[in-house]
Length: 307
Ligand SMILES: *Cc1c(COP(=O)(O)O)cnc(C)c1O
Image (cartoon, rainbow, N blue to C red; front, side, top):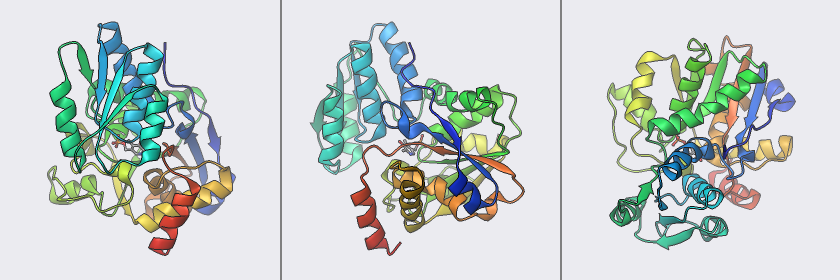
């Protein structure tokens, strides 16, 4: 069984005309859990279930928690998701709708994560949101599908939080003989842990996350993500929250699909013809998700940010 689906990959006319080159969009927001996360997390949950895990435990109030909840329901394994108080009632409701138990604990993810870890017994499996090799192997299927569809982009644009998706994209390119294809790795100001690490020449931890792109809010990227920047052509780009939100609103008008600001960051690079695209005739953007966002929330952000 595979819990993720083969999502459509379309050549976007509006994005192509804005970027003045072919822009393909991999619509992973259409995954059953609402984001690409089900690829890797689904694979890891399946492996844990086949090894007899009695319960899945997660500490993400976002797309990772939703992916674990969805996987648990499909695999008939009970799920507990511990989320911090900052998690929206909408997100909690969506996780509960997947029959998972939601426990609200602590002001930040750190406290929620501590409680989640303290609950893990030998019969349980703990699912990290991004830092696991099997998660990256699962995420890599996003590139397998693009290649199987006969699409050969000259560069891949993806956003970066903890770097799980980035590791998956690089692994996917490598296992399809495309190790030479550059990756444009996009973050927002205030969630730019990869960019700051590259600047410092070592993997750094941000003191705080100040971006509204909560899914990019890992203070420190996975070790493998940083290691890949030395082995693969990875070009780091940082955009503002306003640029990310504007891209989401444009994408709704253009494609009738709601994405969250994390994902808008990657789209902004194409919409705004970022210099990082120079020299590429065709690019692939991964439209990674946005199920906890609403058009109204995006409009409110836009007003606040003057986007
Ligand atoms: C998780 C997530 C990200 C960040 O992915 P990482 O693997 O942590 O880099 C970006 N966008 C969306 C929609 C996500 O769910």
